[in-house]
Amino acid sequence: MKAEGVLPTIGSKYDPLTGLYNRDVFYTEAQLLLGARYDTKYSIVCMDISCFKIINDLFHVETGNVILQAAANYLKEILNPRTSLGCRADADHFILCVPSAELDIEKIIKDLDEVIKNLHISHNILFFAGIYPVDNIHLPIHQMCDRAGMALRRIKGSYLTRYAYYDSKMRDQMIEELLITGNLEIALRERQFTIFLQPIFDPHKNTVVSAEALVRWFHPIHGMVSPGKFVPVCERNGFIVRLDRFVWEEACRLQRKRLDEHKPIVPISVNLSRLNFYSTDLTEFLSLLLEKYDLETWMLKLEVTESAYTDNQVQLLDMISTFKNLGFSVLMDDFGSGYSSLNMLKDMPLDTIKVDMAFIRELEKSPRVATILKFIVQLTNELGMGTVIEGVETQTQADYVASLGDVSIQGYYFSRPLPIKDYEKLLDKYLLDTEETE
Image 1: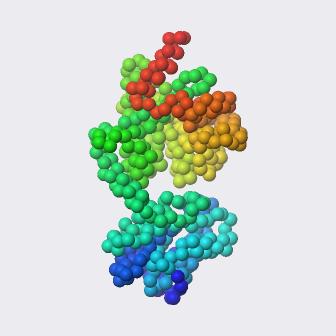
Image 2: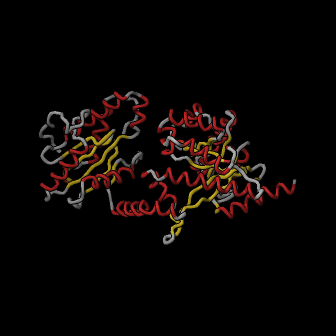
Image 3: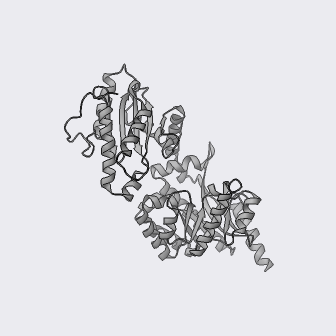
Protein backbone atom coordinates (compact mmCIF):
# COMPACT_ATOMS: atom_id res chain seq x y z
CA MET A 1 0.00 0.00 0.00
CA LYS A 2 1.78 3.07 -1.25
CA ALA A 3 1.15 6.54 0.11
CA GLU A 4 -0.15 8.87 -2.58
CA GLY A 5 -1.37 11.84 -0.61
CA VAL A 6 -2.20 13.26 2.77
CA LEU A 7 -5.41 13.64 4.67
CA PRO A 8 -7.28 16.95 4.52
CA THR A 9 -6.97 19.56 7.22
CA ILE A 10 -8.34 18.36 10.53
CA GLY A 11 -11.95 19.37 11.08
CA SER A 12 -15.13 18.01 12.58
CA LYS A 13 -14.88 14.95 10.31
CA TYR A 14 -11.60 13.95 11.88
CA ASP A 15 -10.36 12.69 15.20
CA PRO A 16 -8.60 15.72 16.74
CA LEU A 17 -5.76 13.66 18.23
CA THR A 18 -4.73 11.57 15.23
CA GLY A 19 -6.12 13.29 12.15
CA LEU A 20 -7.81 10.10 10.99
CA TYR A 21 -11.53 9.99 10.27
CA ASN A 22 -13.80 9.66 13.28
CA ARG A 23 -16.02 6.59 13.51
CA ASP A 24 -19.24 8.09 12.11
CA VAL A 25 -17.57 9.64 9.08
CA PHE A 26 -15.65 6.40 8.45
CA TYR A 27 -18.90 4.41 8.38
CA THR A 28 -20.37 6.78 5.80
CA GLU A 29 -17.25 7.02 3.63
CA ALA A 30 -16.55 3.28 3.76
CA GLN A 31 -20.10 2.46 2.60
CA LEU A 32 -19.68 4.88 -0.31
CA LEU A 33 -16.25 3.48 -1.17
CA LEU A 34 -17.46 -0.11 -1.25
CA GLY A 35 -20.41 0.88 -3.42
CA ALA A 36 -18.22 2.80 -5.87
CA ARG A 37 -15.62 0.01 -6.16
CA TYR A 38 -17.98 -2.97 -6.11
CA ASP A 39 -15.64 -4.92 -8.40
CA THR A 40 -12.80 -4.79 -5.82
CA LYS A 41 -12.55 -7.20 -2.89
CA TYR A 42 -12.17 -5.30 0.38
CA SER A 43 -11.27 -6.14 3.97
CA ILE A 44 -12.29 -4.39 7.17
CA VAL A 45 -9.50 -4.42 9.77
CA CYS A 46 -10.07 -3.64 13.46
CA MET A 47 -6.91 -2.98 15.46
CA ASP A 48 -6.13 -2.17 19.06
CA ILE A 49 -3.26 -2.10 21.51
CA SER A 50 -2.54 -4.55 24.31
CA CYS A 51 -2.86 -3.19 27.86
CA PHE A 52 -3.47 0.38 26.71
CA LYS A 53 -5.28 1.31 29.93
CA ILE A 54 -2.33 0.02 31.94
CA ILE A 55 0.03 2.14 29.82
CA ASN A 56 -2.01 5.23 30.73
CA ASP A 57 -1.97 4.22 34.41
CA LEU A 58 1.76 3.45 34.51
CA PHE A 59 2.86 6.51 32.59
CA HIS A 60 0.61 9.43 31.66
CA VAL A 61 -2.21 10.06 29.25
CA GLU A 62 0.28 12.08 27.22
CA THR A 63 2.37 8.95 26.71
CA GLY A 64 -0.68 7.08 25.47
CA ASN A 65 -1.43 9.95 23.11
CA VAL A 66 2.09 9.80 21.68
CA ILE A 67 1.61 6.10 20.96
CA LEU A 68 -1.73 6.74 19.23
CA GLN A 69 -0.33 9.58 17.16
CA ALA A 70 2.70 7.54 16.09
CA ALA A 71 0.48 4.65 15.03
CA ALA A 72 -1.91 6.97 13.18
CA ASN A 73 0.96 8.68 11.34
CA TYR A 74 2.19 5.30 10.15
CA LEU A 75 -1.30 4.32 8.97
CA LYS A 76 -1.69 7.63 7.10
CA GLU A 77 1.60 6.94 5.31
CA ILE A 78 0.62 3.50 4.06
CA LEU A 79 -3.07 4.03 3.25
CA ASN A 80 -3.72 4.83 -0.40
CA PRO A 81 -6.21 7.75 -0.24
CA ARG A 82 -7.84 6.69 -3.52
CA THR A 83 -8.62 3.14 -2.42
CA SER A 84 -8.37 2.96 1.38
CA LEU A 85 -9.77 4.56 4.51
CA GLY A 86 -8.74 4.65 8.17
CA CYS A 87 -10.24 5.94 11.38
CA ARG A 88 -9.64 6.09 15.09
CA ALA A 89 -12.87 4.64 16.40
CA ASP A 90 -12.26 5.38 20.10
CA ALA A 91 -9.52 5.03 22.73
CA ASP A 92 -6.89 2.70 21.20
CA HIS A 93 -9.15 1.27 18.47
CA PHE A 94 -8.38 1.83 14.79
CA ILE A 95 -10.44 0.61 11.81
CA LEU A 96 -9.22 0.29 8.23
CA CYS A 97 -11.06 -0.35 4.96
CA VAL A 98 -8.48 -1.69 2.52
CA PRO A 99 -8.52 -3.62 -0.78
CA SER A 100 -7.74 -7.21 0.19
CA ALA A 101 -5.02 -7.40 -2.47
CA GLU A 102 -3.21 -4.45 -0.86
CA LEU A 103 -3.50 -5.74 2.73
CA ASP A 104 -0.26 -7.11 4.15
CA ILE A 105 -1.27 -7.44 7.78
CA GLU A 106 1.96 -9.12 8.89
CA LYS A 107 4.00 -6.20 7.53
CA ILE A 108 1.66 -3.66 9.13
CA ILE A 109 1.98 -5.28 12.55
CA LYS A 110 5.75 -5.67 12.17
CA ASP A 111 6.13 -2.03 11.11
CA LEU A 112 3.92 -0.81 13.96
CA ASP A 113 6.07 -2.78 16.40
CA GLU A 114 9.11 -0.93 15.05
CA VAL A 115 7.37 2.46 15.17
CA ILE A 116 6.41 1.98 18.82
CA LYS A 117 9.82 0.55 19.69
CA ASN A 118 11.43 3.75 18.43
CA LEU A 119 9.42 5.74 21.00
CA HIS A 120 11.59 4.12 23.72
CA ILE A 121 8.72 3.44 26.11
CA SER A 122 9.67 0.83 28.71
CA HIS A 123 6.63 -1.40 28.22
CA ASN A 124 5.78 -4.21 25.84
CA ILE A 125 3.25 -2.55 23.51
CA LEU A 126 1.65 -4.81 20.91
CA PHE A 127 -0.95 -4.28 18.20
CA PHE A 128 -3.59 -6.91 17.44
CA ALA A 129 -5.90 -7.11 14.44
CA GLY A 130 -9.15 -8.77 13.44
CA ILE A 131 -9.99 -8.94 9.74
CA TYR A 132 -13.33 -9.36 7.99
CA PRO A 133 -12.98 -10.06 4.22
CA VAL A 134 -16.08 -8.32 2.87
CA ASP A 135 -18.32 -10.87 1.19
CA ASN A 136 -21.46 -8.70 1.08
CA ILE A 137 -21.05 -5.00 0.31
CA HIS A 138 -24.69 -4.38 1.22
CA LEU A 139 -24.05 -5.32 4.85
CA PRO A 140 -24.03 -2.19 7.06
CA ILE A 141 -20.49 -1.09 7.83
CA HIS A 142 -21.04 -1.31 11.58
CA GLN A 143 -21.87 -5.01 11.17
CA MET A 144 -18.72 -5.53 9.13
CA CYS A 145 -16.76 -3.87 11.92
CA ASP A 146 -18.51 -6.07 14.48
CA ARG A 147 -17.33 -9.14 12.58
CA ALA A 148 -13.76 -7.87 12.41
CA GLY A 149 -14.00 -7.04 16.11
CA MET A 150 -15.18 -10.56 16.83
CA ALA A 151 -12.06 -11.92 15.13
CA LEU A 152 -9.93 -9.49 17.13
CA ARG A 153 -11.42 -10.59 20.46
CA ARG A 154 -10.55 -14.19 19.67
CA ILE A 155 -6.80 -13.49 19.75
CA LYS A 156 -6.56 -10.33 21.89
CA GLY A 157 -3.86 -10.80 24.51
CA SER A 158 -2.15 -13.69 22.73
CA TYR A 159 1.57 -13.41 22.15
CA LEU A 160 1.59 -16.19 19.55
CA THR A 161 -1.09 -14.90 17.19
CA ARG A 162 -1.41 -11.21 16.46
CA TYR A 163 -4.22 -11.27 13.91
CA ALA A 164 -7.20 -13.43 12.98
CA TYR A 165 -9.76 -13.61 10.19
CA TYR A 166 -13.50 -13.74 10.71
CA ASP A 167 -14.91 -17.12 9.65
CA SER A 168 -18.15 -19.09 9.58
CA LYS A 169 -17.61 -20.40 13.11
CA MET A 170 -17.65 -16.84 14.37
CA ARG A 171 -20.84 -16.24 12.38
CA ASP A 172 -22.41 -19.23 14.10
CA GLN A 173 -21.20 -17.88 17.42
CA MET A 174 -22.78 -14.51 16.67
CA ILE A 175 -26.10 -16.15 15.76
CA GLU A 176 -25.95 -18.21 18.96
CA GLU A 177 -25.22 -15.06 20.95
CA LEU A 178 -28.23 -13.31 19.42
CA LEU A 179 -30.44 -16.28 20.31
CA ILE A 180 -29.16 -16.27 23.88
CA THR A 181 -29.68 -12.52 24.20
CA GLY A 182 -33.24 -12.83 22.90
CA ASN A 183 -34.10 -15.50 25.47
CA LEU A 184 -32.54 -14.05 28.62
CA GLU A 185 -35.51 -11.93 29.67
CA ILE A 186 -37.96 -14.82 29.22
CA ALA A 187 -35.61 -17.22 31.02
CA LEU A 188 -35.39 -14.95 34.05
CA ARG A 189 -39.14 -14.32 34.13
CA GLU A 190 -39.98 -18.03 33.79
CA ARG A 191 -37.35 -19.08 36.35
CA GLN A 192 -35.40 -21.17 33.87
CA PHE A 193 -32.33 -20.07 35.82
CA THR A 194 -31.48 -21.80 39.06
CA ILE A 195 -28.49 -22.06 41.37
CA PHE A 196 -26.16 -24.95 41.98
CA LEU A 197 -23.88 -24.95 45.01
CA GLN A 198 -20.33 -26.23 45.17
CA PRO A 199 -19.22 -27.06 48.72
CA ILE A 200 -15.87 -25.90 50.06
CA PHE A 201 -14.17 -28.34 52.44
CA ASP A 202 -11.78 -28.18 55.33
CA PRO A 203 -9.50 -31.18 54.59
CA HIS A 204 -8.34 -31.42 58.21
CA LYS A 205 -11.79 -31.51 59.82
CA ASN A 206 -13.31 -33.28 56.80
CA THR A 207 -16.34 -31.06 56.80
CA VAL A 208 -18.09 -28.43 54.71
CA VAL A 209 -17.15 -24.90 55.75
CA SER A 210 -18.86 -22.87 53.02
CA ALA A 211 -20.23 -23.09 49.49
CA GLU A 212 -20.24 -21.10 46.26
CA ALA A 213 -23.48 -20.33 44.43
CA LEU A 214 -23.25 -20.83 40.66
CA VAL A 215 -25.93 -20.02 38.10
CA ARG A 216 -27.35 -22.67 35.76
CA TRP A 217 -29.80 -22.31 32.88
CA PHE A 218 -32.25 -25.09 31.99
CA HIS A 219 -33.97 -24.18 28.74
CA PRO A 220 -37.35 -25.93 28.20
CA ILE A 221 -36.35 -27.00 24.66
CA HIS A 222 -32.54 -27.00 24.50
CA GLY A 223 -31.93 -28.35 27.98
CA MET A 224 -28.98 -27.15 30.02
CA VAL A 225 -27.20 -24.18 28.45
CA SER A 226 -23.51 -24.08 29.32
CA PRO A 227 -22.50 -21.16 31.57
CA GLY A 228 -19.49 -20.80 29.28
CA LYS A 229 -21.93 -19.76 26.55
CA PHE A 230 -24.43 -17.51 28.29
CA VAL A 231 -22.37 -15.86 31.06
CA PRO A 232 -19.94 -14.08 28.65
CA VAL A 233 -22.94 -12.87 26.64
CA CYS A 234 -24.53 -11.51 29.81
CA GLU A 235 -21.29 -9.76 30.72
CA ARG A 236 -21.12 -8.10 27.32
CA ASN A 237 -24.72 -6.90 27.20
CA GLY A 238 -25.05 -5.92 30.88
CA PHE A 239 -27.65 -8.56 31.79
CA ILE A 240 -25.13 -10.03 34.24
CA VAL A 241 -26.15 -7.43 36.85
CA ARG A 242 -29.71 -8.75 36.96
CA LEU A 243 -28.53 -12.35 36.80
CA ASP A 244 -26.15 -11.81 39.72
CA ARG A 245 -28.96 -10.32 41.79
CA PHE A 246 -31.12 -13.33 41.01
CA VAL A 247 -28.35 -15.63 42.30
CA TRP A 248 -27.89 -13.54 45.46
CA GLU A 249 -31.58 -13.75 46.25
CA GLU A 250 -31.74 -17.49 45.59
CA ALA A 251 -28.80 -18.02 47.96
CA CYS A 252 -30.56 -15.94 50.64
CA ARG A 253 -33.81 -17.82 50.05
CA LEU A 254 -32.01 -21.14 50.63
CA GLN A 255 -30.35 -19.90 53.82
CA ARG A 256 -33.71 -18.70 55.17
CA LYS A 257 -35.37 -22.01 54.30
CA ARG A 258 -32.80 -24.03 56.24
CA LEU A 259 -32.94 -21.71 59.21
CA ASP A 260 -36.72 -22.01 59.31
CA GLU A 261 -36.31 -25.79 59.28
CA HIS A 262 -33.83 -25.51 62.19
CA LYS A 263 -31.05 -26.99 60.07
CA PRO A 264 -27.40 -25.88 60.19
CA ILE A 265 -26.02 -23.64 57.46
CA VAL A 266 -22.61 -22.55 56.22
CA PRO A 267 -21.85 -19.24 54.50
CA ILE A 268 -22.65 -19.09 50.79
CA SER A 269 -20.40 -16.98 48.61
CA VAL A 270 -21.88 -15.21 45.59
CA ASN A 271 -20.14 -13.59 42.66
CA LEU A 272 -20.14 -9.85 42.05
CA SER A 273 -19.39 -9.35 38.38
CA ARG A 274 -17.49 -6.22 37.45
CA LEU A 275 -20.51 -4.34 36.09
CA ASN A 276 -22.12 -4.45 39.54
CA PHE A 277 -19.62 -1.90 40.77
CA TYR A 278 -21.21 0.69 38.48
CA SER A 279 -24.60 0.19 40.17
CA THR A 280 -25.25 3.08 42.55
CA ASP A 281 -27.63 0.98 44.67
CA LEU A 282 -25.35 -2.06 45.08
CA THR A 283 -24.77 -1.86 48.83
CA GLU A 284 -28.37 -0.81 49.46
CA PHE A 285 -29.64 -3.81 47.48
CA LEU A 286 -27.46 -6.24 49.43
CA SER A 287 -28.47 -4.75 52.78
CA LEU A 288 -32.17 -4.86 51.90
CA LEU A 289 -31.78 -8.45 50.71
CA LEU A 290 -30.41 -9.56 54.07
CA GLU A 291 -33.15 -7.59 55.82
CA LYS A 292 -35.84 -9.22 53.65
CA TYR A 293 -34.71 -12.74 54.57
CA ASP A 294 -33.63 -11.80 58.11
CA LEU A 295 -30.05 -13.01 57.62
CA GLU A 296 -26.77 -11.95 59.19
CA THR A 297 -23.91 -10.73 57.02
CA TRP A 298 -21.69 -13.76 57.75
CA MET A 299 -24.23 -15.95 55.96
CA LEU A 300 -23.51 -14.35 52.56
CA LYS A 301 -19.94 -13.88 51.37
CA LEU A 302 -19.07 -11.67 48.39
CA GLU A 303 -16.65 -12.80 45.66
CA VAL A 304 -14.93 -10.39 43.31
CA THR A 305 -12.49 -11.38 40.57
CA GLU A 306 -8.87 -10.35 40.30
CA SER A 307 -9.61 -8.86 36.86
CA ALA A 308 -11.91 -6.32 38.55
CA TYR A 309 -8.82 -4.99 40.34
CA THR A 310 -7.06 -4.18 37.06
CA ASP A 311 -10.19 -2.45 35.72
CA ASN A 312 -10.54 0.18 38.44
CA GLN A 313 -8.40 -0.25 41.52
CA VAL A 314 -9.61 2.81 43.43
CA GLN A 315 -13.29 2.05 42.88
CA LEU A 316 -12.86 -1.61 43.88
CA LEU A 317 -10.90 -0.68 47.01
CA ASP A 318 -13.62 1.77 48.08
CA MET A 319 -16.35 -0.79 47.46
CA ILE A 320 -14.57 -3.56 49.37
CA SER A 321 -14.04 -1.21 52.29
CA THR A 322 -17.77 -0.42 52.23
CA PHE A 323 -18.64 -4.13 52.20
CA LYS A 324 -16.32 -4.72 55.14
CA ASN A 325 -17.85 -1.85 57.09
CA LEU A 326 -21.27 -3.43 56.55
CA GLY A 327 -19.94 -6.69 58.01
CA PHE A 328 -19.55 -8.78 54.83
CA SER A 329 -16.62 -11.11 54.20
CA VAL A 330 -14.97 -10.47 50.85
CA LEU A 331 -13.21 -13.12 48.76
CA MET A 332 -10.95 -12.59 45.76
CA ASP A 333 -11.62 -15.21 43.09
CA ASP A 334 -9.14 -16.37 40.42
CA PHE A 335 -6.15 -15.16 42.42
CA GLY A 336 -2.97 -15.48 40.37
CA SER A 337 -4.69 -15.33 36.99
CA GLY A 338 -3.72 -11.70 36.37
CA TYR A 339 -0.71 -9.45 36.71
CA SER A 340 -1.48 -7.52 39.88
CA SER A 341 -1.73 -10.25 42.51
CA LEU A 342 0.85 -8.94 44.98
CA ASN A 343 -0.29 -5.34 44.58
CA MET A 344 -3.80 -6.52 45.25
CA LEU A 345 -2.77 -8.26 48.49
CA LYS A 346 -0.99 -5.10 49.56
CA ASP A 347 -3.97 -2.84 48.92
CA MET A 348 -7.15 -4.85 49.46
CA PRO A 349 -8.65 -5.62 52.91
CA LEU A 350 -9.67 -9.13 51.83
CA ASP A 351 -10.81 -11.97 54.06
CA THR A 352 -10.02 -14.87 51.72
CA ILE A 353 -8.32 -15.48 48.41
CA LYS A 354 -9.27 -18.30 46.07
CA VAL A 355 -6.27 -19.51 44.12
CA ASP A 356 -6.96 -19.92 40.41
CA MET A 357 -7.41 -23.55 39.35
CA ALA A 358 -4.72 -23.19 36.68
CA PHE A 359 -2.14 -23.69 39.45
CA ILE A 360 -3.50 -26.97 40.77
CA ARG A 361 -3.75 -28.35 37.23
CA GLU A 362 0.01 -28.02 36.89
CA LEU A 363 0.86 -29.33 40.35
CA GLU A 364 1.88 -32.83 39.29
CA LYS A 365 3.82 -31.55 36.28
CA SER A 366 5.81 -28.70 37.77
CA PRO A 367 7.67 -28.60 41.11
CA ARG A 368 7.62 -24.82 40.83
CA VAL A 369 3.84 -24.82 41.17
CA ALA A 370 4.11 -26.70 44.46
CA THR A 371 6.54 -24.05 45.72
CA ILE A 372 4.30 -21.21 44.58
CA LEU A 373 1.22 -22.68 46.26
CA LYS A 374 3.17 -23.16 49.50
CA PHE A 375 4.35 -19.55 49.34
CA ILE A 376 0.82 -18.22 48.68
CA VAL A 377 -0.65 -20.08 51.66
CA GLN A 378 2.14 -18.90 53.96
CA LEU A 379 1.79 -15.34 52.72
CA THR A 380 -1.99 -15.16 53.11
CA ASN A 381 -1.79 -16.74 56.57
CA GLU A 382 0.74 -14.10 57.61
CA LEU A 383 -1.66 -11.43 56.31
CA GLY A 384 -4.52 -12.92 58.31
CA MET A 385 -6.43 -14.12 55.26
CA GLY A 386 -8.00 -17.47 54.50
CA THR A 387 -7.02 -19.49 51.42
CA VAL A 388 -9.16 -21.66 49.16
CA ILE A 389 -7.46 -23.79 46.51
CA GLU A 390 -9.78 -24.25 43.53
CA GLY A 391 -9.91 -27.08 41.02
CA VAL A 392 -8.75 -29.97 43.24
CA GLU A 393 -9.66 -33.17 41.40
CA THR A 394 -7.30 -35.95 42.55
CA GLN A 395 -6.18 -37.59 45.78
CA THR A 396 -2.60 -36.45 45.14
CA GLN A 397 -3.68 -32.84 44.75
CA ALA A 398 -5.89 -32.98 47.85
CA ASP A 399 -3.11 -34.52 49.97
CA TYR A 400 -0.61 -31.89 48.92
CA VAL A 401 -3.00 -28.98 49.52
CA ALA A 402 -3.89 -30.37 52.95
CA SER A 403 -0.18 -30.55 53.80
CA LEU A 404 0.10 -26.77 53.32
CA GLY A 405 -1.70 -26.10 56.60
CA ASP A 406 -4.67 -23.81 57.17
CA VAL A 407 -6.35 -24.05 53.78
CA SER A 408 -9.74 -25.01 52.30
CA ILE A 409 -10.40 -26.99 49.15
CA GLN A 410 -12.92 -26.56 46.36
CA GLY A 411 -13.10 -29.01 43.47
CA TYR A 412 -14.54 -32.16 41.96
CA TYR A 413 -12.45 -34.39 44.26
CA PHE A 414 -14.80 -33.52 47.10
CA SER A 415 -17.89 -32.41 45.21
CA ARG A 416 -19.12 -31.06 41.92
CA PRO A 417 -21.58 -28.14 41.91
CA LEU A 418 -24.84 -29.63 43.17
CA PRO A 419 -28.55 -28.91 42.70
CA ILE A 420 -30.11 -27.45 45.83
CA LYS A 421 -31.66 -30.74 47.02
CA ASP A 422 -28.40 -32.68 46.64
CA TYR A 423 -26.46 -29.87 48.31
CA GLU A 424 -28.81 -29.97 51.28
CA LYS A 425 -28.41 -33.74 51.58
CA LEU A 426 -24.62 -33.37 51.58
CA LEU A 427 -24.79 -30.54 54.11
CA ASP A 428 -27.04 -32.61 56.39
CA LYS A 429 -24.69 -35.57 56.09
CA TYR A 430 -21.68 -33.58 57.23
CA LEU A 431 -23.22 -31.10 59.65
CA LEU A 432 -26.14 -32.96 61.22
CA ASP A 433 -24.11 -36.16 61.61
CA THR A 434 -21.36 -34.16 63.29
CA GLU A 435 -23.84 -32.58 65.72
CA GLU A 436 -25.29 -35.99 66.61
CA THR A 437 -21.82 -37.42 67.19
CA GLU A 438 -20.97 -34.58 69.53
